Length: 505
Image 1 (cartoon, rainbow, N blue to C red):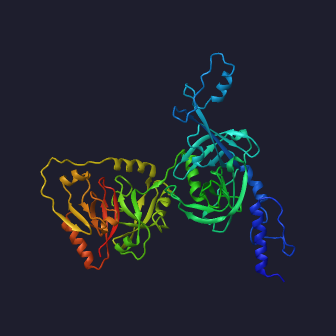
Image 2 (image 1 turned 60 degrees about the horizontal axis):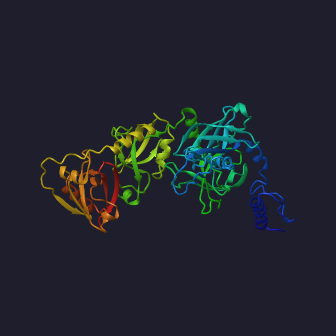
Image 3 (image 1 turned 180 degrees about the vertical axis):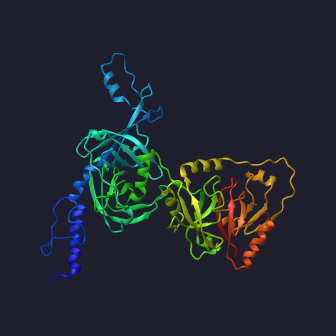
């Protein structure tokens, strides 16, 4: 009798062979029952046949102005009446080398999928259609339709297109719930790799919640289903044929698939698509705070048992919490019922919340957990406020008589009073208050934390400081309490805040 282990191994070999070669006949040992239901679907042909019609190829063209640089191809000067004139005119047309300032036509290929057959709505990646002059949608049956751009979102790399639904009978697919996908679940990718047209690949969810530093809301699904250049914008399906991801990036030294591909989860993409369809732009929730990670040192300094949440490093003037509801130094550990395990969780859950919604925010303030109510603003409006705040710097005047500056040395820093003289010397804005760092010793605890002359210490252990003596007193008090680290809130020259912890041993 054949052991269960051998039987399972044989079944895995059959499925691996079928997947690796895509087509062909795989020899199956006669002693193996020809079924692989426990290890995966014996065939995805029925599912692929049902979905292929909804997946499209996106082709774009863009005219790039010609250059006069060394790489430009000049238009040959032929004798008047030359029989070769027509040939050279055709060859150099749109190549940018003619004196008329013509341009070069650049084309690109990607993938997409139809989500609304009645309205002719197609979803793809923003980078597939970025800066395109013309966009065409090519269907699996050979029909090509012109597309218009409905809206794009650069933060999530999502774009929505529209074609005339009367020009072709469309097949649509719908978004599924990416939050239900588990590592090891089967997925199917369909797209346009290397311009080859509708191509099906199968794999599993290799990982979830991947952050590849491509944007502020990174939360990718990682898959080993082969994704190559040209697959961008195509769908990643679950076993039910629902779109649970938009294929958008690969890691590859060669440009080809090495089994590490990334898809935007439908949980994130579906909301963006809905907003682009409704408004032509995104309308994300906004809390109006600057945040940074909660490190182990910061958690210890704040009296927290574990390092979690997002530390509020500053509050943007004119924002939703500029009324004192949330303050610099607070740690946000829960937002609208969702736990904030690490800093990057907060921007995503806030952005997914509706503008104007009143939400409960759980914070830790000076070691005490409390809940505050916040009404969200709109991120797009907040970005204008934040940029205006960063761009306005009143450096104060230096024409007033100033008293002698008293200084102190602590933790490798020399600190001094913040007055007209030091404001002018370091270019510190008039609304910044605290104690200015005038020098940082090399290889000191302060230098290790990247503290620079011109930064201003506004708080130590969440208590304000205004003089060098305040700084010395606070550090001394923390040492008496047996603290190993001091939590400092620092302001930049323009008033942007950040927190650092400095060793006191």
